[in-house]
Image 1 (cartoon, rainbow, N blue to C red):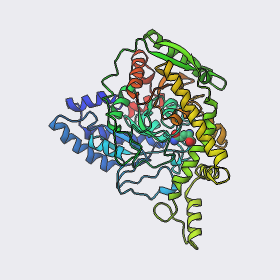
Image 2: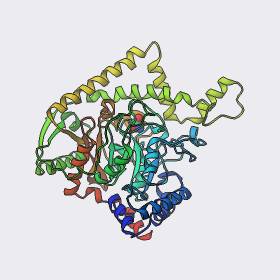
Image 3: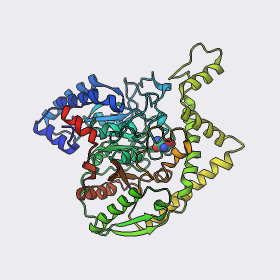
Image 4: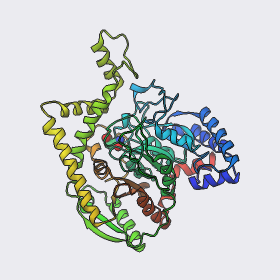
Length: 490
Ligand code: GLN
């Protein structure tokens, strides 16, 4: 069962090959037996999952059910789940049980999908390797000595190891696409405003966006159908009809104009990744696409601008964790100041503290103009680069990451090197555009990601372009050798 796509699982459920309860039990068993290797889950909600599965079976028996009814999904532990701990990978929220569900979670419940549990992540979604979680690091199922990418490393590892058919993630600067690339998955960061952020614990509110992580563009489309849509509880969520993303997957891409930004193929790019991307582009040419070199001249400013804007917003967002209202509280505070400072000092990890310090500094009266305001100006220039690019081409393609999965511990003591991992993904968030990563090769047994960047609200087009490639290639069907061995056991 765990080798099947969501569309196949949905069919299996409807044909009665298995019930949602059986399917859910199968995944729960895999998680129990195998996740000790990866640490991809923080909380497994077995009892609740089986209850939801039983309800889904009742709905399925009546017929006329949404596509995801009865399908198990894993959720990144950043989406609030009523009655189930939502930790955001932090000691700060180790005891936090939300009194409400995030809108995305509600949507999945309405669709009848089953939640297997909450997956691991970098603390407060800050990171590119999933090594900064309070609950321990996550391992890449393709190469156990390597990182799965971050911050959605838990969802990525869980799906790659076939412990869940698909998962939700969030992407502030690359956290869906980068782990999708490193774990051989299809991951989509939608246009800012396409998916509600209500109940998604905020890191950098003007950049955060939830999206699907799955094994194919088709699976991602089915998930996005459920995730997207207007939410009056999120003032930045757009009131715009949601198309059925699965209906246009097979559209012809004859005449598609692909832009290759010259800045994405320069120094620092792994040569095998470059070759794989070039190969993928050739496939698109055979499908009738034309290629044009374009320029996104402000690309090199994306990381410096992001690492001012994101920490600035994080410093404001994380000020709510003060030891008073919710989350961790230190023992025996001497006075109010001691309560604030010790709760935060003990509750947050190093990377989170680093970001809060940088952010508070960049926003302070004396430095606001020099750093925060400058960064916002650069952000506009980056957006303008994309706007002019999309006057010439329909989609932009390039690598998702400069290198394949790196070794655990290799970059964790060098924040700047770690930040450079997001060189190709971050500008997409700064511009608010949709971006998709699909598997396009392997190097030394490690997956390679191809990134597709679309114009605003063109998720359907991106998924269509990705799906057409996936019909011509089988990279997305490859699974980690470790999972093969274990497949026969469970
Ligand atoms: N790696 C980036 C950071 O550390 C992006 C993280 C994300 O997208 N949540 O901020």
